[in-house]
Length: 479
Image (cartoon, rainbow, N blue to C red; front, side):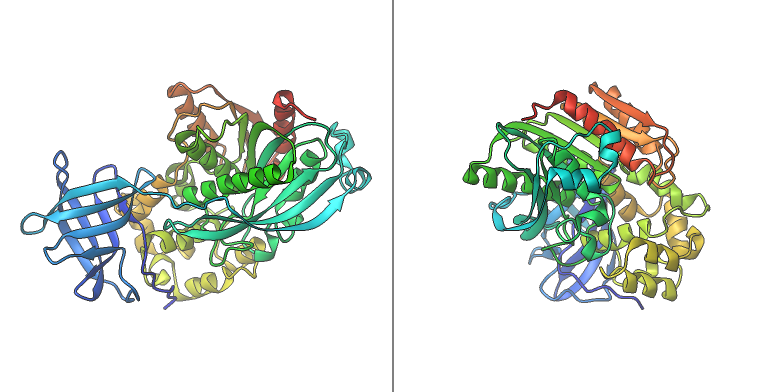
């Protein structure tokens, strides 16, 4: 068995069809998982249809707890990607009715600065030498750039304050206010590839120095699971990615204000691959909940997997070689920690050997290439037949709903937004952007999709970033 540590917390899932999945529920000292189906949706009445004992025991209570009169208390339930607390009153037999539901309250202290440390300074001449393509791209260096490592507070998937970290690239000696650019990096697994440890490994150095020398104060979060944050990175989890971005922006603004560093109030968001997904997640979170605090000047999500439950899921259901075998196991491990599907990860994967390999290699010491080389590339050899069959038949409601809850395109952007994607992207299909743009336009948003023709996912990164830079420059008030 490839067991993961038992968690006393997990997020319940409520589907669009009003099916309720409780991954951890404690009753009379024992932990269970349970399913409730809608009995009367109008009156919000559910019927308990299935429950099973968990193999592992929660050490300090389950997600849900059952009171003396069989009232069920839910600290966290996810519906349409948003988090609520709720309680269910027992009516009769196996019927339960929602008694109380409220939007989850966010903790105070998010964005507080915990530490600041200078990492390095590059002069204009050093930037020109180390990044020779800057001249070809018309990126004439103007300012020396100092890079700082910053520790700050954000929120974890379960609503707790937690330490996080990131980097800030600061133009030195600017005469007037700088625009603030938040850059979200692409997929990494190895801990020493985090921006606050080695910016070059994630491509974050390009944003820090090439945008910093232009006059943008540039920030880049590590994401939870890297830098000052322990544990597995919660890969493609929209909320924690968005919170890590927003709270680093808050920390940066606080540092700038305390240090008298001039900002001009403009805010730009950009990112590539997982960073494109994180950019869209952060934009949605800002515009939905923090419009009184932030005004986004422009947002440029690039090559992101915005349609997890559709386009990305189809990659493993088509019986074709996977372009990046480690992607979906990464999602499974992360979502299992959040939503508590399985005590034994082997139940989701093809064999014990595959499961043991995944648990061993996703330890923060191996990079994505090493993990890809160790994994089968055919979905049938990577995932459990029962998982693939249930996904194809639409029976695996928990995982499908978790993916739907983390799709990031079902909203209406209000800020100037331009998506960038290469037509021949081999890892994150172009359809992610066409589905998102079609939804946005149908919802009445003023958005654009810039289609690039520079090759595959890796080849397209720099052309996309340079195209986004040109758009930002046309809007920015640079010092």
